[in-house]
Image (tube, rainbow, N blue to C red; front, top):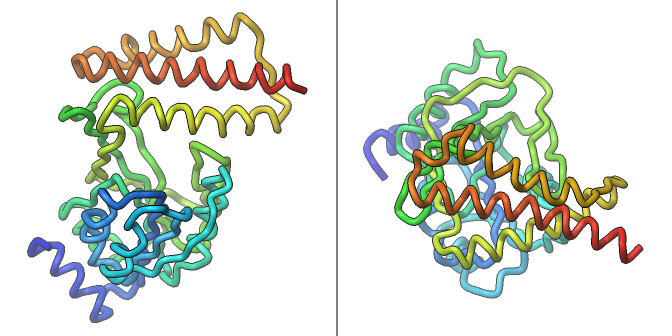
Length: 268
């Protein structure tokens, strides 16, 4: 823990900030990520892990590092899992971090300063920028280049919605944090493809449950449009080969969602 992070941690421990904060992490077989993630959250008053029946050492590592671990099956609904985490968190503020994300000292310091000054602040939540690093390259353009996510909020400010690609639906004013959250997903193409297959199945079932339909034209054109927007309009080409690979795979993601949705209607 760096000196600035230690100072923030000391403020929390001794109550000078005045706002208790809980970090919540969702996990599933994250033994290679969970230790570094939790160590970056030691300044929080508590770390809560909601584990989807991991079969590796995730739970043992988290408990050894002092996290409160609750085992609960995901059942293909990330919002329900996150809302369960909200229920278990004791803090006045809750900070959601994924196991493959890292909190820098600068972000730690910024959050501490914000919560220290909230006696005169009307914000219910804060969004932050997330920077992806894939295959040794930070992706600063394309679909991933300007992602902002609401991850820090008062515990009772809202609930999570949508089964996948979930969002925190906040009531009240949302501020912006300047320092980013660092994300290290899909460190191999095979991992990326495995997650695409998993997430597109959930998304297709969600759309099917909402009575959404697709046709041949949308199955063909939407993925092409997705690639064009990511690679050219959002300048994914500036991220080099990694930017090209991501644009292609996210286009494939769109194709699979619509293809799987079509198959669900055929089965019905």
